[in-house]
Amino acid sequence: MARAVSVRRRTIATAAAWLIGFLIFFPILWTIITSFKTELEAFSTPPKFLFFEWTTENYGIVQERSNYLRFVSNSLILSIGSTLVALLFAIPAAWAMAFAPAKRTKDLLMWMLSTKMMPPVGALIPVYLIFRDMGLLDSRGGLIAVLFLMNLPIIVWMLYTYFKEIPGEILEAARMDGASLWKELVYVLAPMAVPGIASTLLLNVILAWNEAFWTLNLTTSAAAPLTAFIASYSSPEGLFWAKLSAASTMAIAPILVLGWFAQKQLVRGLTFGAVK
Amino acid sequence: MGTIVLKDVQKRFGDVTIIPNANLAIENGEFVVFVGPSGCGKSTLLRLIAGLEDVSAGEIIIDGSNAAQLPPAKRGLSMVFQSYALYPHMSVRNNIAFGLKMAGQPKAEIDAKVAKAAQVLNLADYLDRKPRQLSGGQRQRVAIGRAIVRQPKAFLFDEPLSNLDAALRVNMRIEIMQLHKSLGATMIYVTHDQVEAMTMADRIVVLNKGNIEQVGSPLELYNRPDSLFVAGFIGSPKMNFLTGEAATKHQAHTIGVRPEHIALSDRAGEWEGTIALAEHLGADTFLHIDAGRHGRLTVRAAGEYHLGPGSKIWLTPEKGRIHRFDDKGRAIR
Ligand SMILES: Nc1ncnc2c1ncn2[C@@H]1O[C@H](COP(=O)(O)OP(=O)(O)O)[C@@H](O)[C@H]1O
Ligand SMILES: [Mg+2]
Image (cartoon, rainbow over all chains, first blue to last red):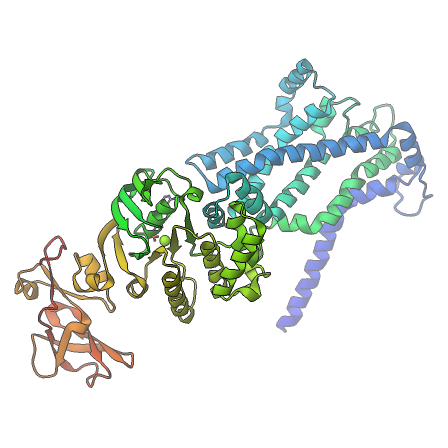
C-alpha cells in the first residue's frame, strides 16, 4: 500500500515539475515560435500556436539590417572579459577571506554584498558623467570595467563559499612542502577549486551576457552587445513583434547552447556545499 | 642535525592566551611526545614550531639559529597532519614528489627518491592512484612518505593515528617507531593518548592548559610525577587519589596510589570496601571498589580475581608506592 502511495506521489511531483518547467520555458518558446511568423500573424487574435505559415523571412531581414556578428563579438568580449578580470581579483580575495580571515572579514563580505542591493540606476548619473569625462562611453574597456565591478561581489561570495569547503590543512601541507604563496594558489588551491571556479565563471558569463541596464545606457554602437541589438528592434516607430522575436532568438541562442552544455557543471557548482 | 629549542615561547589568539610561556630543549634524534587533554594547546605548540602560526613572543631555535620569524618552508621541517591533508587532485607519486618539485630538484633525482620512499612504505603498487582510492592506513603512509622524501631536520606529527582503527593504530605506531630508528631523525609527536605517549616516546612533554607540566622519560613520569595532573594523566587505569585522614597519615594533602600498587585481601588490610564492579580483561581484572569515606578506588588484580561484586574486601597500598601531594597539587618529595 505504501508503495502505491509513493508511486502516485512521485507521478504528481513529476507532473508538477514538468508543468513548472514548461511555465518557465514558455516565454522563450513563444519568442522562438513568434520569430517564424509574419508580422501580421504575430499579433493576430486569438494567437496562433502552431498552425500558421512558417517563415524565416524575419531572420533574413534582421541579418540584412544589422551586423549581428559585431553584436555577438561584443557580447562575447564583454561577458568573458569582465568575468576573467573579476576572477583575477576575486580568487586572491576569496583565498584571503577563506583561509586567513580577520576579525571583520564577515562584515566585509556583507558590505560587498550590500552594494548589490542598491538599484543600479542610483549610480547611473555619476557613472555616466565619469564615463563621459574619461571618454569611456561606448567603449568595450569601459563596459568591461563596469560589468566586472558589478559582478565582483557575487564572484567573491561564490568563490568564498567554495574555498571554505577546502580543508585549510591541505594548503598548510603545501606550505610545509615549500610552496610559495603563488605556487600554493596555482598548484593546490586552484585545481581543487576547479568545479567551483568553473561554475562561477559560467554563471557570471551568463549574468554579464544578459546584463541590459549598463550595456544599454553606456553604449551606442561601437561597443554595443546583443542586448542593444534586441533593443533596437523594440522601437517606438511601430510594432515589429516577429522581427523583435527573431532578434531575441538570435541573441539568446549562443548562451542557451552554452548553458545546455554546461548544465551539469552549473548544477554541481551551485550545490557544491550541499552534496559532498 | 635537528635540535629544537623553545625559549619563552608565548602564543595568544586575540586576548586569549593559549601558551603562556613554554621552554623546552629537544635534542637531535630524539622522539618527543607532546601529550595532554584535548584543547590544552598541543597542536598550537607544534604549529608554532612548524611556522604555521606566528609566535606572540619568544624564540624557536632550530639547529642553533632563531627561526621564529621564518616561513614554514624555510625551517626545514616536515609535518604529518591528523587529516593526512593529501593533495586530492594529485596521484600518490605527485603527492610524495610535490615538496621536491617545489625545491626545484632534477626529475631523475625526484623519481629515485619517490621510488625509494614508496619502497620503504609499501606504496610501490599504488603510486598512480589518487588518495581517494586508498585506505586510511595507506593514506597515512603517503603522508609519511611526503614527509620523509624531503629529508627534513625534524618530523612533526599531529595526532597522525587518531583516524585509524585500533588494530591499524598499533601497526602504524610500530612502523613510525621503526622509521625513527632507521632515519635517526628528530621527531615531535602530538597525541592525547597516553598509551601512545608511553610506548613511543624517548621523552614525554605533558601539557596542561598550555603550560608544560613535566618533561621526562615515560618511566620517570610514571614513577615520579611532579604534580597531581601528571599523576592522573599518565597510567591506565588512572591513579587513585585519597584526601582527608588517609592523606594526613602520610603528611600530605592528597595521596595517590596506582591501581597496580594495591594489595587485596578478603580478611584484613588498611582500607575496607565492597567490590562494586569487576572488569575482566583476561590477563587482568580491574576491580572498582567502594571504600566508604575514601570513595571509589580502582585496583588491578592479576589474572582472574576470585571475588565478585558485593564481596567485602580489604586494600593495602604498597610501601614506597604512595605519591604525596601538597594542597597546590605539587609532589612532596
Ligand atoms: N586559530 C585559533 N584562533 C583562536 N583560538 C584557537 C585557534 N587555534 C586554536 N585555538 C584554541 O587554542 C586552544 C588549544 O588548541 P589546540 O592547540 O588545537 O589544542 P589540542 O591540539 O591540544 O587539542 C583551544 O582552546 C583552541 O580553541
Ligand atoms: Mg590538536
